[in-house]
Amino acid sequence: MPLAENKKIRFDYDILEEYEAGIELLGLEAKSLRIHGGTLDGAYVTIRGGEAYLMQMSIPPYQPANTPKDYDPLRIRKLILMKAEIRKLAAVESGKGLTIVPIRVYNKGKKAKVSIGIVRAKKKFDKREAIKRRETDREMRRTLKGE
Image 1: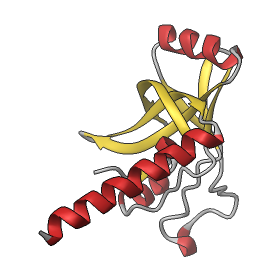
Image 2: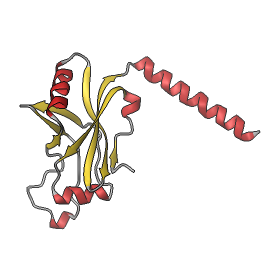
Image 3: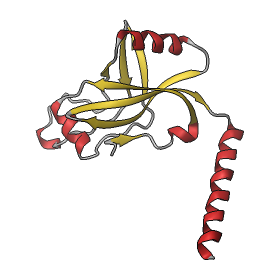
Image 4: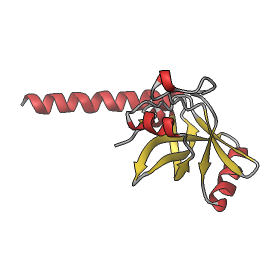
């Protein structure tokens, strides 16, 4: 079960490739994620100086009264990937029309992992087609259920 998930990602983007990355978290962030306190809305991954960083992921404090005053819920978090994967992602990031976004955050053993994807934005007509397909599937299920 994911700790945080970007549910609109499959609607807004075509996912071309997925990678699994580790994430550097503070203790209070790990605890907050375990109680499903994070959001990935508007988050993205950037490559700087041969390292990958997760930007704009919000993790609220676990215990607001005990949190350090300088804690920033939107702080930049480092992702842990292999060098070959980082090189591949850096090449993609410089490419036209492709973006790297987090899909979900989950536990794998005692470690927190992030599933990141190389995505291409869907056009408006693709989104309309997806809505139309979802509505027809829903109608078919209703009619089959009624019989």
